[in-house]
Length: 273
Image (cartoon, rainbow, N blue to C red; front, side, top):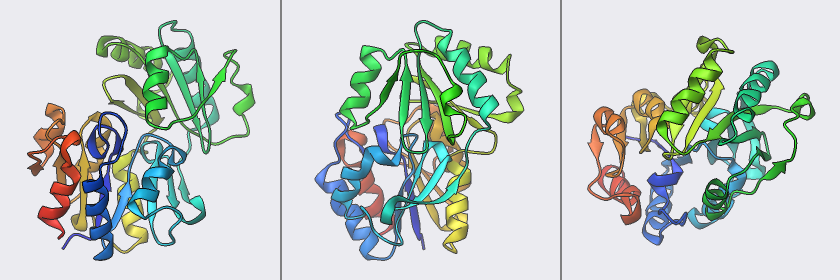
């Protein structure tokens, strides 16, 4: 019996326009009514999907949880209370940021525990974020010192091609020990940097342990590279139909529906209800 579903948001649960479908929301409500935890597991901040939690009837609920920043933060939905903070060391985050800021075509994001800052935002990336309800503050100067007393969850760069994203990874890893980093790709636009050992999979297992749930009792659903860790970590890894090949290759089930056609409702109806 599966006791928890950890689910990516963008291009998995959400439609391409950033909305949550009525069928997906109803299926999530039915699953939680049966006592199954539904846990958003996103690269985004928890602040950006509060309205979606409202639609799932999980907003501000005690005993319900969310994972943000690729495992950087686990919260209880009631009061957005931090359960685990898996931040980057300051000097590591600073070096990653400065490497991104030196690339003119990159929009470099700094995710603190509660606020997203972007240096050199680009119109395409800003539109993508706004469409998903993600608010951010613009950094006018590449000055990282202001973050010295803050918890930095992750640093990521939006770049137009995979070749550029891979080159950015090489540039960062030339300055930061690669074994100290977790590097992932997402949404066909981002290269993402967390500290080593922090990813969607470790956070899923970490939360499961706190709730007395074993990895075999967890379903994970995703579509992209930053979801692979959670698919590898759980008993039932699922790819939505629009998942990339590497995600489909590790999935035990691939939905017939894509993210625009209620793929998560398909999963819940098949394995939970």
